[in-house]
Image (cartoon, rainbow, N blue to C red; front, top):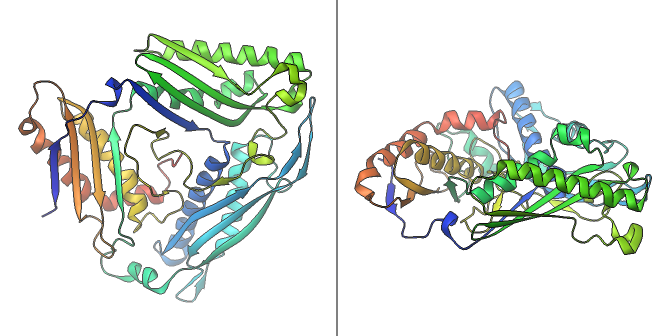
Amino acid sequence: MRSITVESLKKTPVESQAVELVERKGIGHPDSICDSIMEAASVALCAEYEKKFGRVVHHNIDKCLLVAGRTSPRIGGGTVDEPMRLVFGDRAIYEYEGKKVDVGGIAEATAQQWLRKNLRFVDPKAHMIYQNEIKPGSPELTDIFDRTHVGANDTSAAVGYAPYTETERLVLATERYINSPEFKKKYPEAGEDIKVMGFRRRRVLTLTIAMAFVDRYVSSIEGYFARKAEIKEAVEKYVAKQNKTFERIIVDLNTLDDQKRGQDGMYLTVLGTSAEGGDCGQVGRGNKVNGVIALNRPMSTEAAAGKNPIAHVGKIYTFLTHDIAHQIHEGVPGISEVYVWLCSQIGHPIDQPLIASAQLILNPGVKIADVKKPVEEIVERELAGIYDFTKRLTKGEFSVV
C-alpha cells in the first residue's frame, strides 16, 4: 500500500496574491543551452545503451558548463575572437559486458546537432570547443541497474503544481513567440537569447524583456532603435491578444539601452547569444521543467536535465509531480490549485515513494472529503504506471526547458 496523503491547504492562490514574479529564459540563454544539450545527450546515450546492451544502464550527465567566448560586436557585423567552451561532466557507463560506448563522442555529436538546429548563427565546429569530463559511474550506483527491480539511485524530493497562473502562461508564451520561426523571419535581428521577467502587481503585468540583437542586421544606431520600437510594438500586440484577465500589460525591451552612448548603449551580439562573450551557462540554473521560474511557488532543487530517466528520482519525480498535479486539476472539479510532493529513499522501488502528498487549495464551498478519493486514485494510478512514464522520459518526450 502506497503512502498517499491528501490535505487541504489554507493559502491564498497565487493568482489572487498581490504580487507575483515569473521568469523565463529562452532557448539561446546560456543556461538553457546547457540544459537542452545535456538532456539531448542523455536521450542519445539511452538509445545507444539500448542498442548495445538491450537496456538503459547507469548514467548521470547532469553537469555542464558553458564558458563564454570573446567577440567584438559592431554595427554591420562583428567578429568571433575566441570560441566558447562546452564542458561535459559527471558519470556514465563506458563499457558493459565487454561492449564499449563512446560517451564523449555521443555527447559532442549531440551538442553539435543541437546547436546547428537551434542557434542560427553558431557554427558548432568553429565557435565551440568541446571538453569531455564524463567519468565512469560508481560501482554501487551502477549495480542498481542489475537488480530485479530498479530502485531509486538517490534520496530526493520533488514538487509540482497546477494550473499555470496567467502570469506564468503569458511569460512562457511571450518568449516562445519571440523565438518562433515566424518572428525570426520577420525580425531576423532578434537573437535566440531572450529573457522575460514578468512582474504582476494585482492586475497590472509588466514584462521586462532582454533580447540580443544580431549585429549583422543592424546598419546604424538609428536603425537599431527604430527596429527595437517595431519589435516592442509587435510584442505588445501579441500579448494584448493573449490577455485574458489583466487590466494592463506593460512591455519594456532592453532597458539598459541608451541611444546617447551610441554602439555602447545597444545590446549587440555577433551570434545571438550572450554566451559568445558576456555570460557563462550551467545546468540547473535555468527554467524548471514546466518552462518557467515561478518565485511564488515551491520549487524542486534538482536539475532534471541529463539525469538518467530509469532510476534517478531527481528527474523522474520532478516531471511526474507536475504531470500528476495537472491531471488532478483537470480531472477533479472544485480545486483551485494543486501541489504534489514526492520523496524517495535510495534503493527503494521508484513506484513506492516514502511519501506522496497532494495539497489542495479548494474552491469556496468544497470540502476535502468531496475530492479526497478521486485525488488518491489519480496519484495511485500514476505511481503504478511510473515505469511507462520512465520509458517516455527515455525517448525525450518531455522538454527540460
